[in-house]
Image (tube, rainbow, N blue to C red; front, side, top):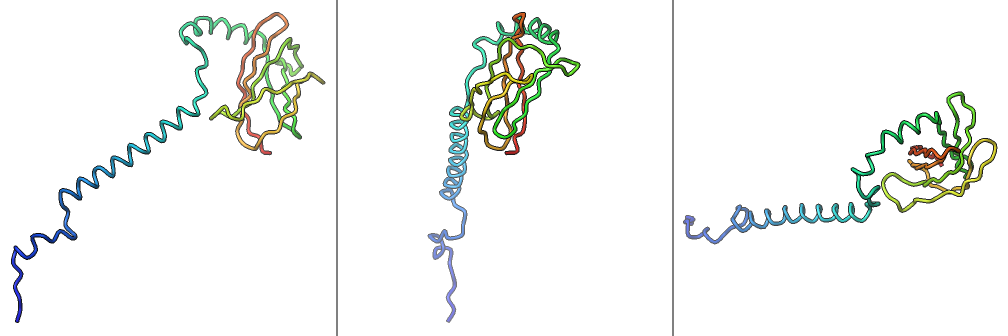
Length: 164
């Protein structure tokens, strides 16, 4: 004997069917994941942000062109190298001759975070500044602030790759 299936027999069976509750759960789950990922990325961005460079960018920009012109008038070039655990910074003129630097301050660090930042203790010798450093392989930035004998400030960020 065969039994016929009526509509009433399958009304309570929702296996394999897309119901309103399942759609709501998928919707809430998908947006929940998106929100959690956004919160994690926002937390990471705020946690690793090194901070402001200047308090008021408008005021800082007012003398930029004058400082740039004075720095270019020095005619300085900068070469950076890391050899055998020593960071060497050489300042030269357009003829490749060493120039006189009255003061040097620099910060060595990564572009993406400040965790590895360090301030090398430079010593002047043989026409260049040298400092012992222990750094991991990868991309590094040296942010230089040097002062010429006449008081002109020279600022430059030099990016380089250390092979280790």
